[in-house]
Every structure is written in C-alpha cells, then in structure tokens.
Amino acid sequence: MIHIILSADRYHLEADWLSTYWHFSFDHYYDPENVNFGPLRVFNDDVIRPASGFPMHSHREMEIVTYVLDGKLEHRDSLGNRGVTSAGEVQRMSAGTGIRHSEYNASDSEPVHLLQFWIQPAVKGLEPSWEQKQFTRAEREGKLLPVASGSPADSSRAQSREALAKAGALKIHQDATVYVSALSAGQEVAHELAPGRRAYLFVMEGKVMLNGRPLEAGDQARVTDESKLTLAATEASDLLLIDLP
Image 1 (cartoon, rainbow, N blue to C red):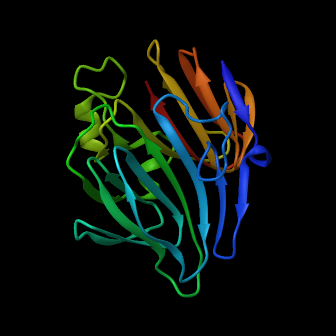
Image 2 (cartoon, rainbow, N blue to C red):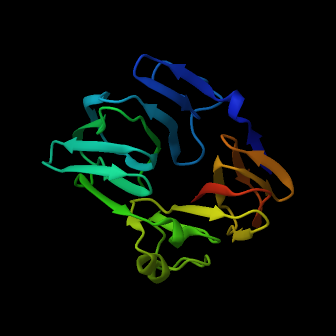
C-alpha cells in the first residue's frame, strides 16, 4: 500500500521568521488521524529567515535528525556542544533523559532550509548526545546513501551494520535507517522492505516514479505492505527515504 500526500496538502505555517510545512501533528496543529507513522513522530520542512531561529528549549526521549538543504544552521545545547551544520550535512541529537538546545540561522543575509524529523527511540533513559557529519553529493549520486541508522547487527535487510558503519551513517537508537539519494533523469534505484517494515519517502527536489506512481518536489509517500520499492527519476531529483519498523 502506498499512501501519497501531495505537497499542497501539507499543513503550512507562515510566520515573520519561519516558513514551515508540518507532515504530522505538531505544536498547535493536531489531527488525530495524522499523529505518527510507526516510530516517525515529526517531519518538518523549515525555512528560517536570516538572523533568527528557535531559542533554547527542551526535549526528552526522542531521536532528532536534521538535514540541511541550503544555508547554515547553528546548534547550541546544554551539554556544551556548539556547531554549524551546512548544506548536505546531517545532525543527530539523542534527547534521552533530557537536553536543552537552540537552533539559529547562522547567516545575517541568507535563509536556511532544513528537514527535521523526530523518531521515537527503542530504549528510554539514554544519556543525551549530539553529533554531525558532512555527506557529499557525490556520495549519494545514483544510489541510496545511509546517513543515520540504528539497524541491528542481525538484520536480514540488504544493508548490514558493517555496511552502514562503512558508509559513516550516524547512530540513532531505533531500528530505522535514513537514506538520501541524488538521481539524474532516467536513473533508477531500488530498495527492499523486509516483512513487517514500512517506508517514508520525501521528494526534496525533482520528479520521480515510485512503483509507477508519480511524485514531485514536496510530495511524500507512506508505504506499508510492499516488498520492494523502485524509484525512477523522470528529471534530476533529490530524495529522502526512511526504512522503519
């Protein structure tokens, strides 16, 4: 089953410093039929205007992954971590027993565009932690590149823990894997889903066919009860795919 939600059907909030699309119930937006997709609880598509952002705030018991598409995002947290995440870079924060952090556009003149998604951890009570890593476009060209994963060592899926570690995927505390891909027009990639698994696809840019069904930039697909996904680009495209329990 493939449930497609078009870009125009996402919840949109326009504020003086933030333009955002929320894929699931978040903050003041609540839809009892759209709270989560398995352990995927939040998926926000944010554009933060220059010299603005989210002030210090708290999180608990959540794996928070941020992928910057354009611009630079500055992170500070109560553990003393401080970093600037640039385009193509991925940041992972395990909130665990509790952490406070702030996120600001690091530029005084250019907006920052990012995706941020929250995944519920498999284990509670973890010690909070944070890390970030750069992944180049060349690394994701023509393939699905794992950038964050908690896939178990005995996984029967195509990507073993060893392969994920070799790829340099950041560690999340859930049996899920986040992939990114850059496809040229006419290129195709495939992904197998083990029995009982689900997948979440977001088209960041371009146009693709998912098992023969068309999606464009901003569209999402929530996939269940499928054994194989075939992604064929009809024009140059950037994709994000999450394999979930």
